[in-house]
Length: 73
Image 1 (cartoon, helix red, strand yellow):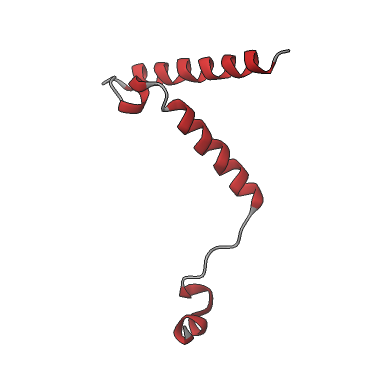
Image 2 (cartoon, rainbow, N blue to C red):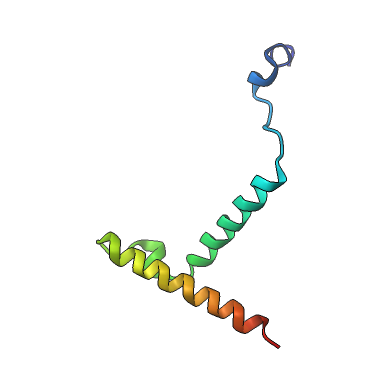
C-alpha cells in the first residue's frame, strides 16, 4: 500500500471517471449486444467483408425500425 501511494498515479489507481466518455461507450456496448441477436453477424458466417458489412447494415436498419415502431403510439 505504501509503495502504491509513493508511485502516485502510476501505482494502479483507477482512471478518473468521465461521464461523457462513459455515455458514448455505453451506447456502443448496448448496440453490440443488440446486434448479437443476429446469428450470422455474431458468428461471422460471411467470408467476404462486403457481405458481412451488408448484413451489419441490414441488422442495424432492422433494429432502428423496430425501435421506431415501438415508440409510436
